[in-house]
Image (cartoon, rainbow, N blue to C red):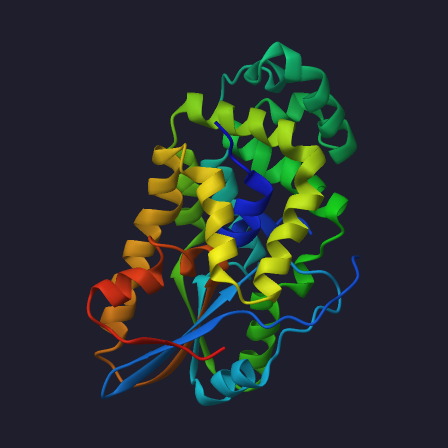
Amino acid sequence: MKIQLPRLALLMFPIALLLSCSAQARIARPALWKVSSPTATIYLLGTIHALPVGEEWHTPAITKAEAESSVLVLELSDSGDQAKLAETVRSIAFAPGQPDVLDRVPPAQRPALQALLAQSGAPLPALKAYKTWAVYLFALNPLMLKTIGLTGEEGVERKLTADFTASGKSIEGLETVKYQLGIFDALPEATQRHMLAEAVADFPKAKAEFFETLRAWEAGDPALIAKSFDKDLKSEPELEHVLIHNRNVNWTNWTLARLHQSGTTLVAVGAGHLAGDDSVIAMLRAKGLKVVRVE
């Protein structure tokens, strides 16, 4: 069983960037779709939450979608409030009586985990209070981003947020930080430990895997993105259900409800949610809607 957590985190969970975050930039043409009703238009843009410095992705079609939209909708509605973020993390990520962090992975992986945590600067005694999923998200993930050479400042959502804020337009969210952390927190401890162990095993490949997915995103190729997700999660139906399927269902229902309102909205979510047979795009089409690729 394989869970390529670096790729999943950057495609699906902006929370993974909030407590952390160069490579040579390229010009990207990410996929953009449009779905309309008699009163509303919704643009759907697939994103990567962290990008190399200087990555250019503002194509004419995306710029047009921005200009037409009065509202930007992101995955998270409350990621900018650092005080609230810290309070939410304290309320969810810690639990008394946890075993030592190194004891939560198989013996053969403990030296590698210890070395990674040493590189991260996170002291083992302090990490003991972290739940297992939080060790990955708040200790290993920042190190992974640094190793790849990424900065959260260059993510698509950050740039869009700046644009819409400067224009005085509204910004909304589909989820909250508490909800996203709760997805991980609800996983059985055995699953959390398996995820941590796989993250340790995959760490040396994180950079190559990220740039493989980045090239698919730059090319606007949902089929390649979907292929990477199939490889990562099809052998993990429990994780696929909670990380992708359930959220895609929620966002599909949100889109359907939004189409009954008026105006134009730009929705920017992780590219993995808009690719493949179980994507928001596929679910909308299954409901009989015409979803048009405009980029």
